Image (cartoon, rainbow, N blue to C red; front, top):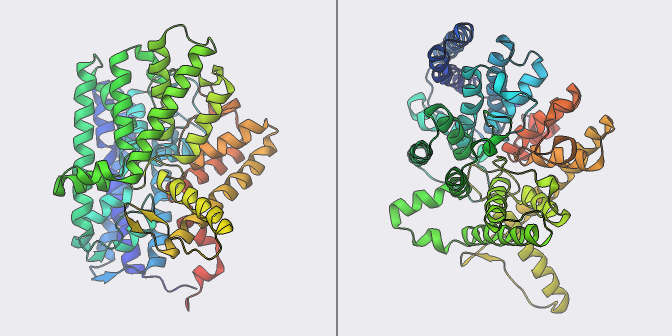
Length: 488
């Protein structure tokens, strides 16, 4: 059995409980404002119970200045995300909004992992407080539950570096930063500034405060759960679509670049290879799809074609999942492009999911080097990014992750195939959940939902959502015998 630092482990579990419970306070207030007494009572009971349990754990696990090992970080991150999703599901079940615990867990996982997939067919009938909590989980999960905890860990006497290693959404996260807590706080300030900015702009566009907050949570966290059945199409506003599109793209960018821009200017942002390729993909695919929509006769208005193509490309590549059009009615080539964007995802260290643009760049460079070596066997060619040579171990890690990602998709599709669903549904449901995108194709397309799937498939996809948010290895490593060997 592995040698686990139980004192620090349960102290952080207590911290998470003490954070997740009180995070329901805004939803409690919303319930009171809208006169939802039963929902408000449910929230306050969960808040008190979670807070007391968290404080109790932190009290009995006395302060002990120690550094968590990498293995501790892997286990802790996985447990905390599953625990957060489980607690987040309680309001859905307790209020009767989603009586099936498996469906409620799926909805909660979808929120915290910023996936945006839903089992609900009639969203608008749910209590306002429940819908607020459903969207607020995006905002909590967007930056990472434990990034917030890392900001508080110095007061607990615990180093958060190995937790950041386990939770970091991409290969370029600064895992050696000695001031991890300070960085986490700075990233959250940027996150909050984006939240305030978008909320104000949506208010200017005519949204009420409730809708503005909910859809800002879904945008900044790149989650995409809406309080309306027809998502962003409900508002029928060009201004709102443009604002949300811009913020989706902004939040798909590496947040460390924003942090660096504040310290050293915007030069590093606009010269960053991943950022430039990311913007090129957004503009290039949006333009191609807009032209395809006009040529195929799907749209008569160029303005609508450009708006919908840009919005859906921004929504899919950033893995937000908001919808303004039924893209399954678009030409097959457009659907195929969107499927590829689901796989690629946004930038590393952003709130987006997917493989990440930087990995796609490195894989393409790796293929290019392979071709070059076939032509010139004696030439030693290094792979560079932003003018710096990428270490061979990093390249190997990226290649391994990409292979594991593809393998996980096929394995998941086989599990979903027991539903006897069509091939597109099987693959797209796994791709969209593993990539934290939201809507897929077929039975889980933009006008459908995941409620048609069995409890087994729903639970499998719930695990896939969390696995995708944790970059696969963090969760999968727990199932290896070597991980539990105390001598390793």
